[in-house]
Image 1 (cartoon, rainbow, N blue to C red):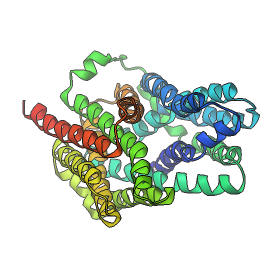
Image 2 (cartoon, one colour):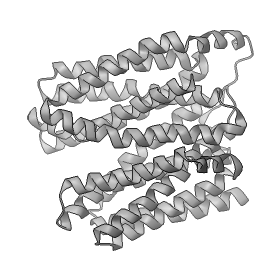
Image 3 (cartoon, one colour):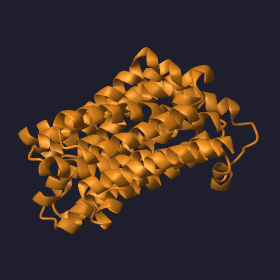
Image 4 (cartoon, rainbow, N blue to C red):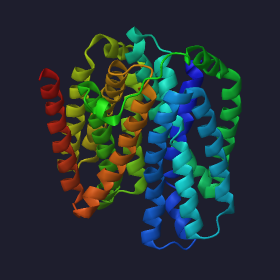
Length: 378
């Protein structure tokens, strides 16, 4: 059933990435001001962070089955609610609800996957889940933009809502054994772990930091790359192709036999390598104006991403027990959401140029890579 869980992970991230090209135009068509449009875009990540944390807490108490079903069904309903929007404030409210309930899905899905994967294969397992995330990053924006241009933004959201509804029904049929398994172990003493207990674990601390800075760099990339490309005289299509290059290379690393390295090499080493390679790629992107070279640097960034994502997941799995793994995943993906917002907002707040934004992100990634090795040795 792990393949079905990977499909859920794919469509959960598809829902996220499909919103990227359509939400700003949708808000503007409703008459939203630039400020409200920014709030509409950012509101999803804000409430998604809250949903991630709540999902983690409830997953440990109720098991991933019930939380996953609720998240899928509620997300489906929230996506259909976009059909009723007629003014910007209503859109803002639905964005909050959508982000909140969608935040229930990913921690529960990854907890299910981790709990049903043999420990000696956990690296390969998280690499495969990363491949589905990467695939969603490529397919989501492209399909969304094409369909919205021919139909409408709400039509795209309605399609995603229908898929989520179907997945919630299939989950009840295919994953019910998880709930039955939970009932067999519920008689054991209930154990808890506070956020303070989680942070005391070096592996978890590094995993949380890795998640944050991974998505921090993604926020900078999403914000600054289109600006740099336009400055160089190219169109938005070129930005999309560059981002697709990184996703395509990452997927290749995830699915090729190279994914065995994540079970044979210590996660902290693959983490440090991936983060350092991403940092170097960001520095090179900031210093390059030749488009051909930028494709190469984005390929390097994709390799770094492919090493970093499974590494932080493996660190989390190795540093947790099943009774509080859901909570750990909840905080983990909360750091993901916060990282995206921080990456774009920090560079925007300091009014950095595209090259300066890449320089800042590159330095931060390299320093974090070195610190992760130092913390591990200490």
